[in-house]
Image (cartoon, rainbow, N blue to C red; front, side, top):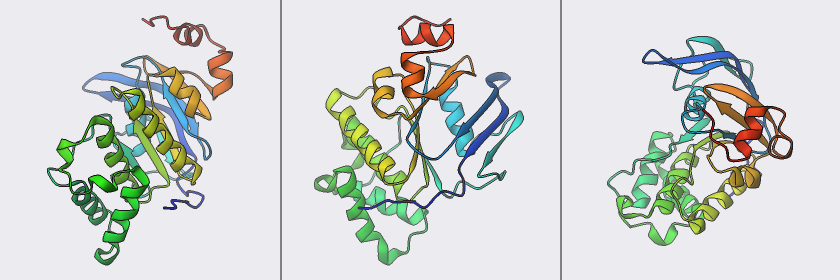
Length: 243
């Protein structure tokens, strides 16, 4: 199945001095960042650093208390060409195939095209043999594959992934990483949060390190992970706890 996307009108995504407050707590603070087309952008940082909130803001699900987010130079763009996979995606109490039929209906795919698209998506994520299995009975890795397939049902130009391999075993992690490479190679911009520096090194073109809601460092993966410019980055990459 080919997912080749045209140059997205929603890229680049610019964060211009963005701060996000939730329930009176500042989660992102004065973030300025450009997410451009190309290889995956991977967000790293300790728990609570703001990775998930940054993804939600880039998706358009949370609104800045100050600053602005723009998509392709425009503001308040509806997320029709963006998709987000949460760390713990909910499964509909239906079969794997029915989950995809529902996702295609929500995406506005004509009814007569859905059956063929379901087969294509199942083949892409390696779940065709499990098409009739109830989705809640899938393993953790299989659930993430289904969540990716549901996200891809809307043919996004930009795919946001929130720690998609958290708590997965090495074999399941490898499968998800291969899917990320496949999707990225076919023209979809992937923006992914992870706590795993090894995964960042394997997948990223660009790395963004967050700490306490701020961007500490960003740049090509080889530069940030091998020659960090800041003390915070050096400590995090060395495995030290950041307080």
